Length: 362
Image 1 (cartoon, rainbow, N blue to C red):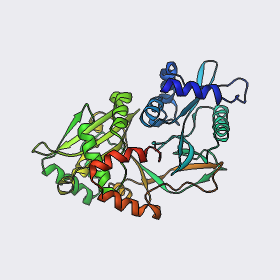
Image 2 (cartoon, rainbow, N blue to C red; image 1 turned 180 degrees about the horizontal axis):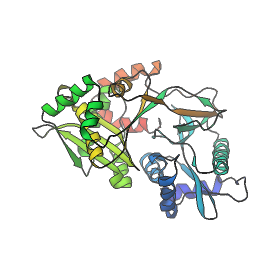
Image 3 (spheres, rainbow, N blue to C red; image 1 turned 45 degrees about the vertical axis):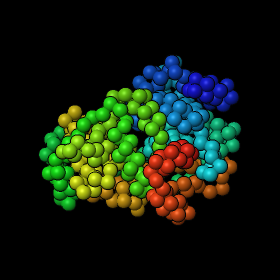
C-alpha cells in the first residue's frame, strides 16, 4: 500500500519549491535510510519524524501520507511527514503527524523549513481539508491558531539508580516500593500478546476505543529494537501491566501502556514505570519522556506526582474549510455519554469495534 499511495500523491500533490537551489521531494522506500539518517542528527527531529511512520499509518489505518523532504546538492535539509484523515464523524484534516505526540517541520535551514511548510499549506488547500495541524514541542507558525490542551513531561535520568529513586517524591516512591515488595518483576516480550491484553483492559476501563492488534504488530515490526515491550508479572506469573516504549537517540518514551485489574492492588503501573526508568538508566539513556497528557486529567496528575514538570506543547492549526478548531478529545462534554456506554460494553465487542473508530481520531 505504501508504494501505491506515495506514487499517487507524488503524481498529483508535489508543488514547486520556492528557492531554486532547494528541491522538494516525496519520500520513497529507497529514501528511508537517508531520511532516518537525517532525523537522527537533526536537533528538531523526534522519533515521530522517522520514515517508518509512513508504513505504519498507511498499512494500519489506510490513510494517505505525504512525507516531504527538502534537499540541496544531494543533502537532506528538512523533513515534514503528513497524513490525511477524512472522517464524517471527526472531520477532514492534514496532520503532522496523527497518532503521534510530536511532529511538524524538522529542518536545519530556514529556507528548507519555508519550502516544506509552503508545500503543506498548498497540499491542504488542494485536498480541501478542514484544517492543517502541526504537533510541535516548540512554536513553528506564529500566525496559526493554537490550543492550550496538551503538555509533555520530560526529565533527565541520572546515571545512578538510587539517585533516580530518591528523586521520586515520597508518596510516589512508596507506591514503587509497594510493587517491589509485592514481588513484581519485568520481562521483555518479542510479541504484542501480553501487552495488548493489559492495554485493552486498561483503555476499556477508561471508556476509550482501542487500537487494533495490527497497529501494535506493525509498530514492533517496523521499529524493531527501537520499539520495546516490557511486561510486569506477579510472582504467580500472571500479567499485571505492560508498556510499549520507543527509544530515540538518548531518550526512552513509554508510549502505550496499561494495567490489568490486579495492577491497582499491587501498584503495578507505578512499578512498571520505575522499572522502565531503572532499565534505561542501566543502558545509559539520559532522558525519560513521560509523553503527552491533557491538562486536568488523571494521567497529568500521575506524572506530576513523579516529580516531572509539565512542558507546554505547541499544537498549531491553520484553518481551511473549517470555521473552528477541532475538539475531538474525551474532555469534550458531548463524548461523556459515549464514554460511559463504552465502559459498559463487553470488552470483546469493544475490541472489535474500537479500531474502526479510533483510526479516524488521529
